[in-house]
Length: 143
Image (cartoon, rainbow, N blue to C red):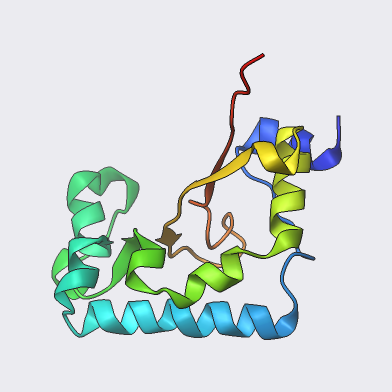
């Protein structure tokens, strides 16, 4: 069992710092910040795929004591459907290093991994990965 697979099995995710180089990380940040800006400006397409911090609070106020929802309506917590909203992310998510790491994490061949969905969740630093919703799954192969 690889370390990556063990982390994934225990935590439900694995942080792999060597997947993206500095320029790719910068591009990811720019594209993510662009989506946040589009949410704040009221872009209907982004709003339809977003859960604001205020809406998340209303769903589970006990998890965020002291939050004043009125101050957080324009702040996104989760933005889903990323590639539809920002096609530039498709190129970055096609990164071969990422798919080999995923295959190692799932203990399967790269050809058995499928991209399922992706969302951006805004969290404080060091509180799980930024793009934690990149869903990959092992495809069952018929005998």
